[in-house]
Amino acid sequence: MLGIGIDIGGTNTKLVVVNRAGKALAHERFKTEACNGPASFLKRLGAAVGELRRDYGRQLVSIGMGAAGDVDPERGVLRFAPNLGWRNVKLTAPLEKLTGLPCAMENDANMAAWGAYEIELGRKFGDVLTLTLGTGIGSGMILGGKLYHGASGTAGEAGHMKIVPDGRLCGCGGKGCLEAYCGSRSILARARELIKNEAAFVRKYADPARPKFNTICLTRAAAAGHPAARRVWAETGHYLGCGLASLILVLNPGCVVLTGGVSRALKWFMPSLRKALCGQQIKTPFARVKIKISDDADLGSHGAALFGLERALK
View 1: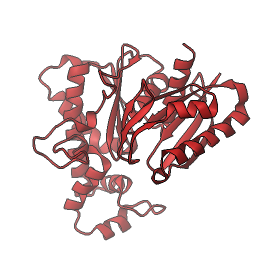
View 2: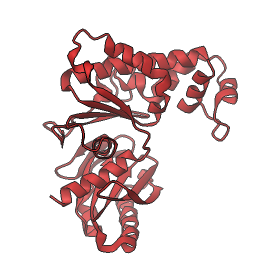
View 3: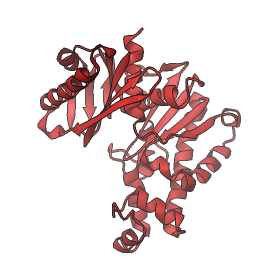
């Protein structure tokens, strides 16, 4: 039995076919083009699923879908997706009608958390916290072997924890959020304040294949010993450690999984992150918690496929 996992991004939508062991058998993607509206998107998504059904037939039994934003998992409604500009969009029911397959939908960080729980950890930990570190910061929680939603389905908005009173402005409109210090856009904004000549910095440190001022460029500069780059990554680790410490104190997870583009700079932010954790006065929750970095760029879509299978086969 196979499941389809879907990760709806602001630029691209990714599809994957996965078996029960978590092995990916096929990958597809297409431009999300959210500006054309949900109806156009659903039509193209239905067509993409239809192509996979022609290839795999009755082996396909379910769809799992993740989207960045405020999701109502019970009704299959995307209540608000800032990166898409959509509000109160029904997705699961129309997709089920188009494809004939049962569909489960969650916030994308929840699907990444399920992927970490199933694939990265093999269900060895019953309590897992996953943080997705990209342009924004999301989180998902597996508690007692089950995905935790909270009272209204919005549990896991760790990116908007306030870690600095009246601090930097966040994209949500608040100040001092974790995302305002550890999201990639915010990391680069702090770096720009310290780097005098951005063009020269990019020429020297950027990946020649992608000559851009991005976190890859900043990581390469840190590896070359650039003091500003190393300072920014050390600060990032400190702020991330402060936010993570609060989450660990409240949730007491057995394992924390970090994933997303920012996590690739672990060599440069991890020392200050661990220092922030070690500086906590209550030591017990930190003594045995394992911190793991995932290098699976498709953890969200893989997790979505396995979550859809889990729901369909109950």
